[in-house]
Image (tube, rainbow, N blue to C red; front, top):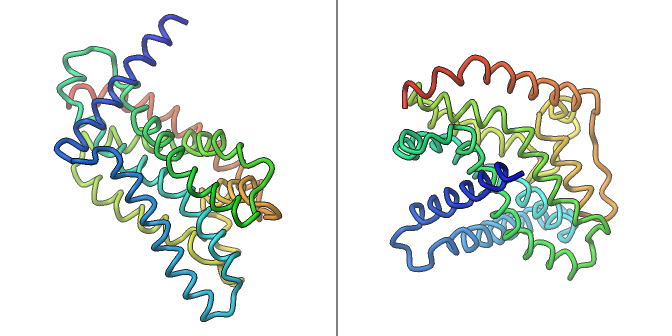
Length: 252
């Protein structure tokens, strides 16, 4: 127990240090993340409100749909992007401290949870105001954490791969763009594409997230595919841990 508390304390110090470096010299400091997140919310809502008016959709339902999608995506996107450089940015500390690499892989997840909590409050307040929030909305917090755990084997691999291959960062940026536009975050998928969309690995997590957050939202999930992806995530973690854990420290 003491060992876990010690590691938790070290993780908190590393997260705080990362924020200090990231926002060094900025007058508003880490508040910029909240400002950027809220502005992105309003931008997407404004654009989608106009599109829904053109297409004849319900404006309120469109805003709810987009708000829940953006709330799900932004923190996870930040986590994946941060994972790309978490080892290379902390190279000096890793060599001096001797605490191992595992604790550094947890920095992006910790920051993701902080960002999610900050962004969730204005979203929840809005949903309460329009009376379309689920009684189980509190479950979005453990669910987003479980979504991050599903992605952890892949973000861990990205962190290690970026040490060995510098092309990883631009590849990840492209994949994030593809991930964003291939998920039904800003749009309701056309019927002809739904049979393809069910194979998106993050779709079940997004659908359950919406069903937990919004009242009367029914998730559209293929649970067989969902279970297969969870199995793939676990196996990917085992394989990369065996294959890369001894190689990466020598290249830092």
